[in-house]
Image 1: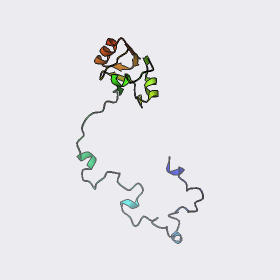
Image 2: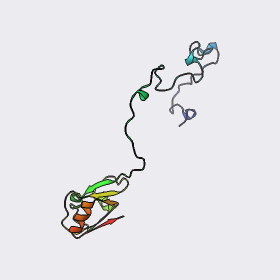
Image 3: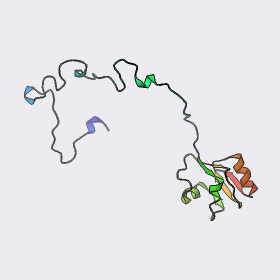
Image 4: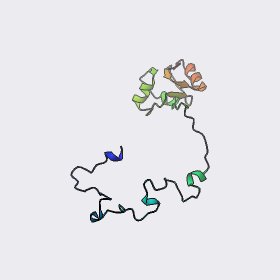
Length: 146
């Protein structure tokens, strides 16, 4: 949205304030800006965060940490949660969302080895931990990377 796209609400009868259109308007001569000075000039205010020359807060505070823009964020699920699903032998990300076990797929699913599964299952996911793979294969199932 740009400033020129703004318009009053439908049905509003408020008139625009027309400044600099003569003394009779009440908004003439200095156009409601007072006399001279920085705030009377065009473009004449300091930006947000300016503190009168004092070192601004965003420069006084230390910068810490690092956020990797290329990191892959997985939705995490444990084997104990997968073991609760009784009616499916092939577990896919779509089934987990449908059952409400995972709310957001993010960039894929990673299966962790917390808990056990009792029956052989084929689990399709984007990543598996080493302990999850060993427990799935011990139960007679398969861990397939999608």
